[in-house]
Length: 179
Image 1 (cartoon, one colour):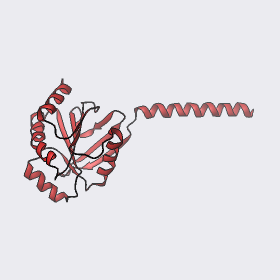
Image 2: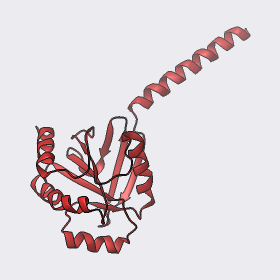
Image 3: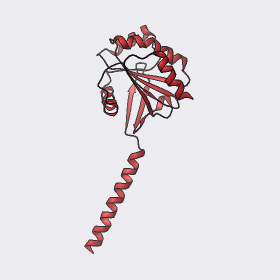
Image 4: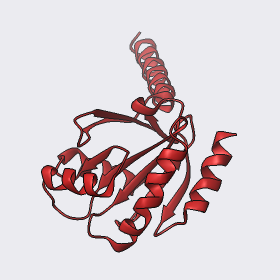
C-alpha cells in the first residue's frame, strides 16, 4: 500500500512539474512599470524572446538607452526625433536616460530644449536599474551608450545597436519590420 501511495505521489509531482514547466514557457517573466517625464505610465511585459509594449501595441519599438552628457547620444538625438516623426503611426521610441543623475525637472528642460518627441524615462526611477539589469542579463550589455534594441510588432527583439548609428540604418531596419 505504501508503494502504491509513493508511486501516485511521484506521478503527481512529475505531472505538476510538467505543467509548471509548460506554463513557464508561455508566461511573461516580469512586468516593469515606469512613469515617463510627461507623467504617462509605460508598461513593459517581458517574455523569453522580447517585450510586450502595452503603450505601443502593434508598433515597431526602439528601446533607446542614452545619456544627457554622451556626445554620440546627443549627435543621434535629432535623427531619432526625425524617425519618430516620420514613422509616427507604426513606430515608437521609448528612451531611458541612464548616464548621469539629473533631476526630473532638469531632464524635462533638456527634453524641451532638444525637442524630444518620444517618452523619456529618467534613472531617478529605481525601476530603471532593475530594467537595465534585466536588459544586461538578456543581451550581455555592459552599459556602453548609446545602446538600442529594435523590436518587431509582436515585441520580438530583432536587432541590437551599440554606438552611434546612422538614420538610414534605422530607416532600413524599421521599414523591413513594417513590411
